[in-house]
Image (tube, rainbow, N blue to C red; front, side, top):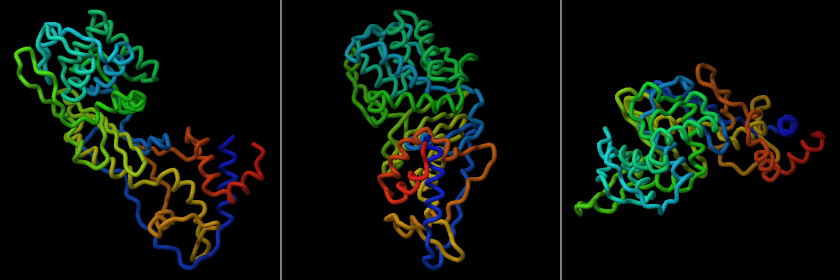
Length: 354
């Protein structure tokens, strides 16, 4: 229904243009950046649109970003205040560890911090053993069931911590789905923002201070999470959540030489692209002869108007950009434009029975 209304609105908006002198000079819009990552995807969460991607459906090792799914399963099945005893086999975990001691008791909340902030493989195994009723395999089965439920059809988990295994893989597109799902968990969003945290001392009294493995926190404007990963098979992996001026961008880079530099470049490009609001306003700025204008004229800055005049279609290639008509949030867009531009929306609505 909204697709028809949007077409009507576009036609009406385009017809309500008046010459207002010389059109602002067009400016070039940069293509997506060249990254070291072999697979990546970037997404506008407010518009529910994939802005661009590269090899996004290729299966590959995912490293410790696995722990986002682990955290979701734990929160679904355990209370944060539950006390958990660290099993002996967990403290022998390879790779990144939080320094847990066999037999010590920690809350689920503390173990989630150890897993998501410090990226402790020992904490992931401890939580999986607890929620799996003493069976890590049972916990991993829950992870795979949830992945299928979310539509992550190119993902398979073999462990809860992300260490390299043949049957442990995902894709950039599936990991984007994981980011989106994780944002429904306030506790994950909260923990992902922690830069430095003091944990309970170990049984010997030794202090434990964890610094987040996400080096973009506090150093890159707007970054509020989410999870790093780094193994020999996966190289560097990063799931990113960045928010500026009310616009939220999710990003995934896989098999990267520098996951932080790649994420910065990708997110900077994403914020330079046109938002949903820009796409909706562009028809109001159709050029007529040597000039163009809009009526009724939205209250925009001169630089914003220049952006709209310069707005071209994005290039095609191995990456894709969703069209406005494909937006799942079309209903919200319709409400926005009716409120923002009632004169135009009213005219469009008058010719549409849908």
